[in-house]
Every structure is written in structure tokens, then in C-alpha cells.
Image (tube, rainbow, N blue to C red; front, side, top):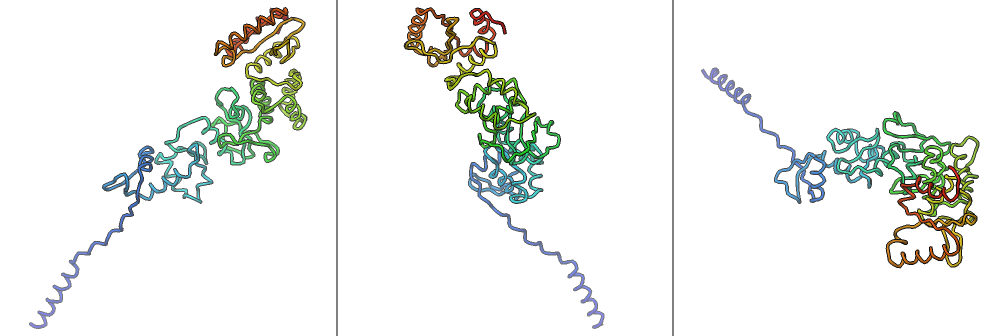
Length: 365
């Protein structure tokens, strides 16, 4: 009996040991980070996954992914763009970059360039993204650079870039890549954090790639003082070489602009000057002095004067109106015919302006 009792007691003890439940392991404490109201607003705009318990504007609980997303936002440039070689792996991992794109935090514009979902879509952002996609050493050129300089051109559909790198399927992204021989020797300027070619280089590139915008681009640079006829001739001699596109067009245009040292003082005068040369009108004197007045364009043989008037200086006040009437009366008393044209006429009614001047000069286009 004592032996049997000992065996039974041992068996009951073993069964109790096996049936004892395991105690739960303590959970890892959740890390709590503070969120300021602007940060909360950024997360709500970008539809970030925000996990919080009792979340207020001053404090919240968020996941590790949320911290990574905020890190990407802080490192975006002024256009809301992120350049992958600058982020991965120095500031973020490849998986975090891919996760941000999948979750909609970033929108991939080019293989290595993404933009924030909350960033507004602008032309400058498109141009900056194209520059980054071709490498930081690339330069915006041609009509795209002219648009950045402020030339009155349509918003660029195709973006022209000087780069030594190759971008696969560049035409799908509306990119036009040009491969210069020595990219490092090309002068550049910074416009809104975007590197672009200088006005002199831009003029020759426009002549080669978009000749229809050549005269308009040259007019703008003349009126802003970025270029003169002499400086353009100097640039022509410096960069001219056999077979370089655009050289002949610029040389022919400069051969027509025989202005000596005088330059247009307003956009109106520049437009009228370009119209006269392209229409084939007789030679004229620019900014000629007649008595106490200086006229814009003078044809002495035809006794004709053309004035380019802007509303700001010629039509905005009563004094300006009376001053022009006195001026015209004096010139007409000397036997001159005075013609006045406005900015709207020179811009949108050039055919009508040529027809009116043709009655004086009796020439054909």
C-alpha cells in the first residue's frame, strides 16, 4: 500500500505540472511621439496611416512608417520633389521609398524622381523634375530656358535638356535630350532653383531647335538688356563652327538689325522693329531727333514717322494725351506723316499694320 500510494501521488503531481497554463509574456511598450498641429495637418492631407489612442493635437501614437513618411516630407525641395540618389540609402531605405510610392505618399514622375502628393503641380515643377531625371549636372536649354527667362512663349510641352546621361524612353516623358560635346564648359544661370543656359546660349539653341521663336526671343533679350547686337555678334564669333545648327539663322538676323549702338527702350519698339525688318520696309532711322522731339522710327525720304505707344505712358493720363497731340501737331507742321500703333495692334494685328505701312512705302513682302 505505501508503494502504491507513492506512485499515485507522483502521477497526480505530473499531470498537474503538464496542465499548468503558461503565463503571458509582457508586451513591448508602444513608443509615443508628439505631433504638432502642422504635422497632423500634413498627415491628414497626404492620407497617411495614423494610429492613435486618445490622439490630440499635441500628442499621438504613430507607427514607424509614419516617421519615415514625415522624414521624406522634410527632405523635399521647394517644388515638392525628391531625388532618389539623395534619399536612398543615406536618409532612407529602398523599401521605405517603395512603400511610400505604393501607399500614395509619393508619385513617381521619373525612375529616380518623385513628388509629394500634397505638392501643387506647376510648370516649374515639371522642368525641375526633368532636370533631376537627367542628372544634377544637366542644364535646361532652348525654348524651355527662354520660357524660364521670361520670354513670352507658350508653356513648354516638350522640355529641352542638355545632358550627357541617357534616359530610356525619354520621348514618353516629353523630354528632348541634347548631348553637348563639353557640358561642363557651358555657362548657366539659376532660375527658381533650376539651372538654365545663359541668354546668349539660349538664343542660339532656340535658332537651332525652334526657329519660329527666334525673333521673339531676341526682342525680349534686347529690351531686358541681357543682350545687345554687339554682344550677340561677339558670341556668334566665339561659338561659331562649321555645321553648328542655328549659326546661319542668327547671322542672317543680325545682318538685318543695323542699329549701331541704339537699343529698343520698350517691348513695343522691339516688336515694331522686328516687324519692319521681316516685312522688307526701306531703311529707317531709329530714335531720331527732330527739333525738340525724339521719334521712334523715321523715314526721311518718305517723310513718315512711326511711334510705338504704350498705354502706361501715352494713354493713362490727360497730360500724356495732350502732350502727344502737341507733338503730332509740330511734326505734321514740318510735313511729316505720323503713324501711331499700340501694343495690341503690334501683337495681334500685324497683318493690318503691314498693310497700312505698305501704302506709304509701296513695297511688297
